[in-house]
Amino acid sequence: MYNKRVVFWAACAGMLLFGICLITLGSVAADLREKFQLDEISAGTLFSILPLGILTGSLLFGPIVDKYGHRILLSASCLFMFFGFEGIAYAPSTGLLKICIFLFGIGGGAVNGSTNALISDISDKDKGANLSLLGAFFGIGALGMPLISGIFEDRFNFETVLSVIGILTFAAGVVFLMIKFPPPKQIQGFPLKHGVKLIKDNVLLIIAFFLFFQSGFEGIINNWTTTFLIDQQSLQPGNALFGLSSFVAGMTIMRLLNGSILRSVPVKKILISSFVMILTGLTLIKIGNSFGLSITGLVLLGAGLASGFPIMLGFVGDRYSELSGTAFSIVLFIALFGNTLVNYGMGIVAQNFGISHLITFAFAETIIMIVLCVIVLRKIKNGKQIL
Image 1 (cartoon, rainbow, N blue to C red):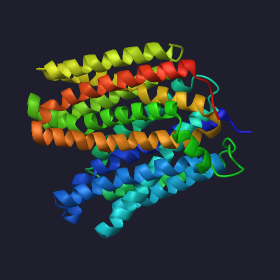
Image 2: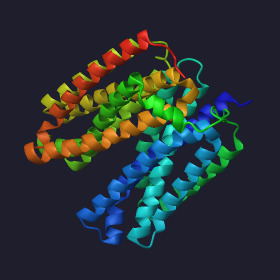
Image 3: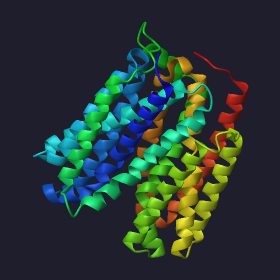
Image 4: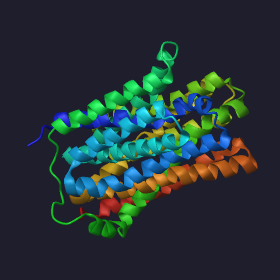
């Protein structure tokens, strides 16, 4: 037997670490460029390694947790993240730095997938609400890392800060070894065989491609908003960064609300209100001629995007309960690949037509997501649990 409350908060701690992991490289990018004298191309290579590692971890975690359970996977992932933090802090060469960043990404991607699947597994009801609460801890970690770096930058160098966080990650891995988790689901055989069948399921694929565009949407806002606000609305860099933080804060607060006082609201109503907030937020940013209007739009945009992943992953957990790890692995891999591909597409648009088309690009993504969401809801309504 295992304690659901202990497992729940352990998963939230893991997601907090993933939030820190995902934002770390950007937080210390300037320090790394100065330390290793990196040019634009070399720095870009480093940034491309992290998502590759996260994709790898996202693909591998599912069959492993279905076969062996979450304990070993989470502990090993924390160990990978520990080596990543310490390596980024103290690697003597760019070659070793790249290896550490890749390990860092594998650990982070596996923790992200495993904690989502774990919350789904232990939630008899309200999967979406519980996954929303889990997702809020990602936002807390993502907001917390720049704050920690800013507070201690005058007292300690970035290597020391990263090293201490790495030690905390190692400690989390030890704690995971001491916790009782739900037992493996596929002790006999290996889930990859069943994974092939899952890939052929059209409902899973539609959910995956909804999250493909959702992840891409989040990615272009995270990566291009500051440039848009500086170039198109003439904001100072500090205010543009505050705007980006407002987007993350809006998402985090909305996930906390969905996971607490709004958990009894029907999923359909939450999704409708989410798309209304997204469209309103984009409109305010598009017409915004003041700092306050842009901030309001970004908060609404973050709040609107907050529900997509928890609700859709909740559908996956309900429908594929006997192979939740493998199903989550497939969906998250496709979603994260969408983040990479959509961001690349936005880069082409920005280079050839200008950054002003960021909002047009985002509107187009919203329309696609609405269509896919309607299809998913119809399929879920008419379908039944499989596997």
